[in-house]
Length: 282
Image 1 (spheres, rainbow, N blue to C red):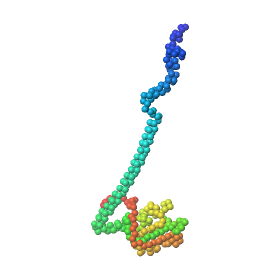
Image 2 (tube, rainbow, N blue to C red; image 1 turned 60 degrees about the horizontal axis):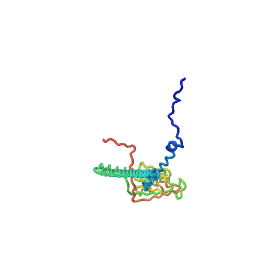
Image 3 (cartoon, helix red, strand yellow; image 1 turned 135 degrees about the vertical axis):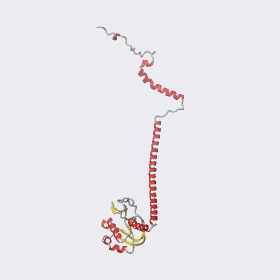
Image 4 (cartoon, rainbow, N blue to C red; image 1 turned 60 degrees about the vertical axis):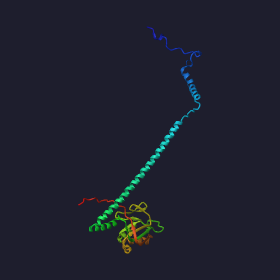
């Protein structure tokens, strides 16, 4: 066998220095890792002390001040952005309201112009005047124009101290009252300021009676334009008029009718055509 020549060669590693040898540098005598650990903090403190001696007026910056300033600025920016967003939303809402009001005013102006042109056109000929008179009567019946004239005023209310539905004015009671007035010759009727038309509904919604989708509260004031001399007598002769006399005498419902020299009834909101469609001109 041949001897392993490599194991007999001299190693490159040198023997550790003798700690008692004062001629060797400290990093050699202590070991490099121990030397760095022992002297790194001392050198940092010495460096800071040296800078303080060179510039005594300079104060050390506290840790975290820059971070606090940055956070404060960020919070200020966030609050400012939120306030600006709220203001912008309010401005947009106000702008939309103003736009709706402007368009509503424009619609009223156009309606006035159309009515004026229509009147001028219809009054130009005999046939036009006859058509205008018929249109006026139909508008009164439909409730699309305000009406002023003599008539009767009827005020109805629940019985004093009413405790049940039988002693209260119901929607069907108002329906009977209105039908009796129509049958007595009334040309236009309103309830608590709500003008009635052929599309009006008197019904209960929740705990209130509604007319034209508007909630009403007792007492109910019914205005009927017509002949004040004949309406009261005809009212008593109608079936629904008799029903109201029974309600008054049996259940104590309050009913009072008076003749009025002048009544003013408002127009109902312009109805939307549900089934009619524009036709072609002949």
